[in-house]
Image (cartoon, rainbow, N blue to C red; front, side, top):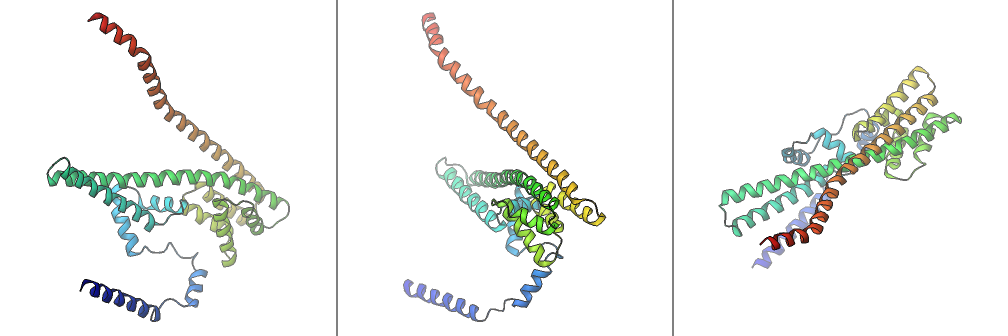
Length: 287
């Protein structure tokens, strides 16, 4: 009986999928091309119902939704994937904590619910922090690649190349994820007839890299005022290189400060290990 009901349900789902496939009313090719050509004039696409629900559930961590969107963009992670992994882990560990507290420690159901909720909240906060830390590391890597990109662009423009071709060729000089991202945005802007500095300015806003926004703004001003773009690029390259060096020094300083705690613990443990026999001997002699 149960097997028959299961077969009927599976057949019904299969027929529903086939019917939807044959009767789907998706956008036409003309609609897709229109969206592609007008994408740079519109704002960010509206969030779907699932994304809005995910943001509402993740809001318990107190993270700014705009900052989370930038962190997801620079980390190359979608909101759906991040929310799914975070909420699944929070629900699983919270439920296990609730069951373990109520069964193993024989606490009341209300107290077990509080413990489970606290564990789930901690998982959400930790996941958001991991995303923010990953985004910080990716931005530092992007800034380092950006300084190289600007320097190569300046050299190419000084050699007589046009601005668009120089930026595209500079983006093709690297193969890491930052250069691939720059290459993709510049190629899309060239196809749409958009200025490259406008595309770079928008990319900097999306991923939260201030140096890229400033670079796009300076390029726009240089193009509008007729100033020498080569000088502007060289100045921006020096600024980006100095900013990347400052970030590296700050990261090294943070790592050095983190090492002080384990070093202090190891020193205390060594002193305790060396001095314990003498102290034990003194106490035994006194007794």
